[in-house]
Structures are given as C-alpha cells and as structure tokens.
Amino acid sequence: MTKTARPKADATPGEEGGHANVTFMPGATPPARRKRRSRAWIWLPVIALVAGVGYYGWRAYAPAETTTAIITQAVTRGDIENAVTAVGTLEAVKSVDAGAQVSGQLKAMHVEIGDAVKKDQLIAEIDPATIENRIEINRAELANLQAQLQSKKAQLVFKQANIARQRNLVAGNAAAQQALDQAVADLAAAEADVNATEAQIRKQQATLAGDEVDLGYTKIYAPMAGTIVANPVKEGQTLNASQTAPTIVTIGDLSTMTVRAEVSEADVGRLKVGMEAYFTLLGQPGKRFTGKLRQVEPSPTVENNVVLYNALFDVPNADGELMISMSAQVFFVQAAARDVLVVPSGAVTMKRGDGKAQVTVVTASGGNEVRDVETGIRNRVSVEVKSGLAEGDRVVVGSGDADGSAASNRGSRRNMRMPPMF
Image 1 (cartoon, helix red, strand yellow):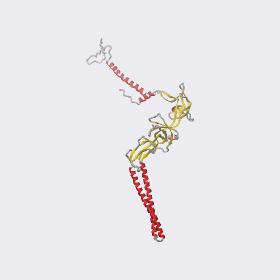
Image 2 (spheres, helix red, strand yellow):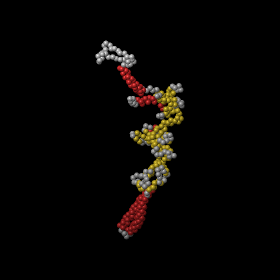
Image 3 (cartoon, helix red, strand yellow):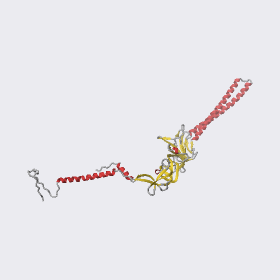
Image 4 (tube, one colour):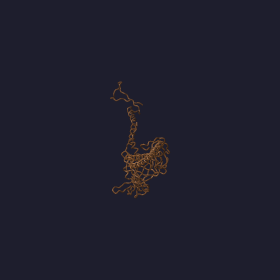
C-alpha cells in the first residue's frame, strides 16, 4: 500500500510549478544510508590485514624471554697429561749422498729407489776408458824415466872412476890440475842428473797412483747400509766432477726415524732433554709413536717473524711404516697421570690468595654446593682432582639458555628482512 505525503507549507516548490511528491516503500532503506554501509564493509579486510601484519612484527621483533639453565657434567675417571704440542716432519736418522768423484759417463746403475743395500755394495759404474788410457800413458812415461835413470847411473859410475884416475895422474905429475877439476865437475853433474831423474820417477809414480785411484772411483760403492731414497741421475748421463761431486744416490737408514719438531719460543723453555715424547700421523690419528727428546737445536729458524726451535727425538721403524717427510703432530709430555678423577677445566675456579681451587657440585636435592678441592695436573681441557670429589658427582661447568635454539631462531629472524606481504 502506498501513501502520498503532502508537503508542508514551507516546502520548496518543484520545477513544474507544484510541490514535489515523495513516495516511500515500506521496509526500504533510504539510498544515502545504504551507500555508507557498503563503504564500511570495504575497509574491514584492510583492518584485518593491518592487524595480522602487526601481530607478525610483534612476534618477530619482540624481546626474547630466556630461561637460564646450568650445565653440569659428571666427574669421571680417566687419563690426563700436560704436554707441549708442535708440528714436525719425519726424516732418516742417518743419510748420506753417494757421489761421483771423477768425471765421465754413467755407464751402469745397479740399484733403484727403494732398494735395500749393504755397505760396500756396488751401486753404479762410470765409464773408465779415459782414465785407463791416462794410466797407460803414465806407465809408459814412468818406464822411460826409469831407463833414463839407469843411463844416468852408468854415467855416474864412469865419472867416479874418471876422477880417481885423474887424481893418480895429478899426483904423479902426469896430468894437469885442470883435468882433475874437470873430472870433479863432471862427477857432480852426473850425480845431479841421477837425482833429477829419480825425482821425476817419484812424481810420475804419484801421478800413476792418482790415476789408479781415479780408476777405482769409477766403481761407486754404498758407504753405508740402508735404503736408496733418491736417485737424481740416470744411466747414460755425463757427470762433471771438476767442481762439485754430483750425487748418484742418497742412502738413508730407515730402521730408525728422527722427528724434527718446530717448537715456538714461548714453549721451548718447557722442554728438557730426556722427556717423553710421542707423535701421531695424519693417516693414523689413534696410534702413538713414542720416543725421548734427544736434542733441542740452539739455532732457531724464523718464518714470518715467528721464531721456531727444532726439537729432535728418534723412534724405531722396524716394520717400515714411517716414511721420510711425513707430517707429525708432536707432543712433549711434561706430566701425565693414569686412572685419576678428571673434571672439565671450566668447572674449576682458583681462589685468590691461597691458590686453592673450588668447584660447584649439584647435590642430591638439586641444590648447589661449593667445595674446596685439591687439583693436580691441568691442561686446557681437563683438571685432575686429587681430593674433594667422588666419581659420579655432577659439577657445574657453566650456564646457558634453556630455549637457546628458539632465541637463536628469533635472532636470525631479526637479521632477516621481512618479506613483502602485499
């Protein structure tokens, strides 16, 4: 049903000279009010999105609430040692270079790298032809000098007999004094010739002996028993030994190896000759090779302004598993104890003044109790406890966050840029 509302007397006239008629439908909403409601519904998703972004930011950037928890560890029984550590290399305890003392072509090589040799074993030969020819020439020259010596000696005998005759003639006034003087001079010359020839023979004999020694040098023998560890020359190569002796092979005694460890100047004062030492290899970290410190070389080496001293000790190598130039992690043991009570070094606090130590022990009721303990050997990781604790006691090592992982995750999120939401 529709109703027609009449306008009031002060209503504004319409365009057609009359009053405007407005028709209202029952239950209908005026147009202006309906438009305002539709705009409010549009803003609701935006408000919800802003609220969600705000909650995400609060969760990501809000301060983390951490719970402090103590870290404990049980007192155990084990071994402990205090040692000076260093890095070293392995080398043969004794080695020698077998070189060529004469020049010539390397005619034969009788050994190879890795071969075991005995002392005085023939290992190489140099072509002896040149030296053999020189020896033959020297022998011929020596024979010539010896023949000359025989002639000189014969002349000497004649001169001696002539001077005797001249003396008799002069005594009997049968010859002039001049003849005797000439005989005396001839005898002296003959004696000088004999002496000169004998000297030349000795010289030639020495030259011949030197050539024979050189001939012996064409065969190279092992100066010691050991293993061939290097062979810098090859068969057929020409060797020049006029200035330096070229190395044919290097022989090393590998039955015992020497460890050359480089110790810093800060730790070298802790080393004592005779102290126990051991090392491990890169390929066998669980196996120890033991020995005793033999020598600390007084002259250091300087590398990048770091002063290092060489400490040497020997280890047996009966099975040959140790090789030259292997890298070794070396430990020089100052003190060691076996089967003792051990706690982490972080659990021990040294008291000021009296030098005593304290640890914090977790009691059976869950509380903490501070105890005085007597300590022994100490290193960077563990401390020996001689009294004050029992095996199985739990000591406080430190403290940390109970939810450390969550705090770490939140911290990592703080360092990340928040991705765009829209």
